[in-house]
Image (cartoon, rainbow, N blue to C red; front, side, top):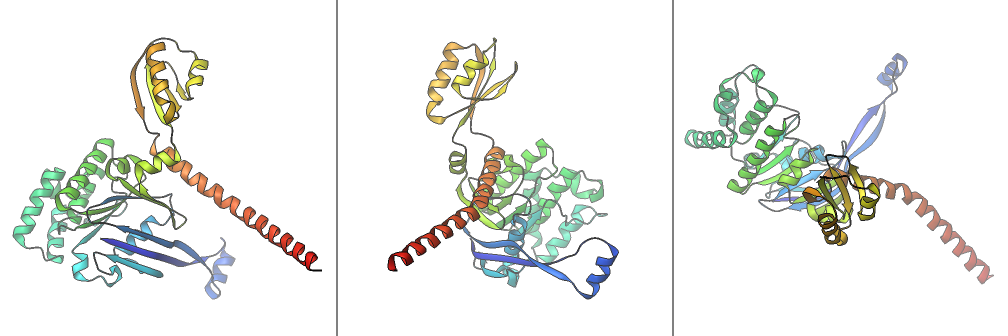
Length: 352
């Protein structure tokens, strides 16, 4: 459904120091630098997949989504979405995709969302009967109720986000590019949006590429994740495999019903929380059975739980390890160059 091969998107950015003199100088002579927002990204996504697209701020996620949706042209590389080149912005392509950005809106501020729905129906040439059926389905999935008849400026952030999703899906696209769709929403609204995305994906066999800084969104929706940092991919694969590779330990937590000796806990694993309300240990997976058995037999506890480490911790360690490896690379390259020079001198001496 989506093919990205060696995608590059570079921007030429004007840089100048602050101050009036620098501002006047920049009128006649500007200094530019090249920013590599995306630099050699490759991946494929099959129809119906839900894929998380993760990375820190400035990693290149939104730039990639804009290229995939045809808003930006790539500097190099090949991009296809369902057989279409996004940059050509063919009508058939635009009818099959949608891009939802949590920090931008398409609803008209002083008019009710229903006006935007009517405009989108005309733009996409959706037949009236199909439009009515789709609106009925979206109303059932999103519980729009009277929201579509209230001016957009009177809607809360969560209500507006639901209406934004409805406006973006009126033409029943089969490919969804979702950029922070739950940003700023409360927990209940986040849960509702996640359920809606999953239901829409299953009902229409839609392909979903999701970016989010809320890791709960990713865990709930995306069996596969693509991780990008500095414009390049550092992981592409199963989410559980990533968690196991980066943080193979399990998190064992329980509520103590009697005083517990900290030294005894430290013999079982690394203590990450220890207070009267909750105790949590990081335990190697191969020791998990023995630790749980000891807790149940030797201690008075309740509410025992076993789970993977939080995805936030996994991502933090992944980025930390990547940057540490990048910092070590120049030193390793210098050592290798010194070894080559020394070997070359030895060869020269032997020849002499």
